[in-house]
Image (cartoon, rainbow, N blue to C red; front, side, top):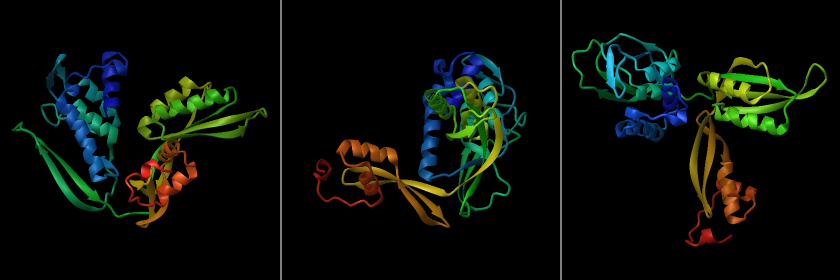
Length: 302
């Protein structure tokens, strides 16, 4: 959320994101808004956030730079990530902080969205006499569990035959930093019989521009192929599992509500192996088949 805010403010001020001063957004209440909402999503174990069109408002707003038209410049830039309406009320209805939150996390409401509403919350503002109720409503919906959840993604790829393996690996790192969910390389033989590598990146539609820019910036390719694709995901959960030598997170996928596959987090197992000197495979097994220790000194022995 803060990254999107920084990028929007940087464009407004004509500077780099790392040089941005957040002004009002950096105030304590905004920091609490953003971190508190993020913690709330974690505690509620929310899988997805959906929103309808967001009213931005109209008129003017007073900020550190003076009187500005609504929507504020940063809000207007962030609104490209979601559907919005204007002039529904004569005041600022969406702040840069709220716009960044929606832009970072929310998707359009699917039709139909079927499920059971398990909780409802309201945030009510103090401004009175408005044509639209000054209320934000959030609903927690429990949908019927399905085997897979289709998700629309963008795949970008290019065939490259004039970059070294080191340069290609660096490109993959930059694609991930730009927002790619996954990147991979495939060996191909091009039209002149030259062995080459096909570099692919998978990302959310809203990250396509950034990933494409990184592709051009850090590779020699003059052209990129792009198409939409559907990804089906099993429901997954990650939970910490205690072992005699430390904590290991274990990821579990589910089919029809039942555990299907369990895998110990590699980075946790590697840290455990380096700490204890145990083989990596043994640390992975400890995460999957933990043996509770009743000896307080067990972590000091191998």
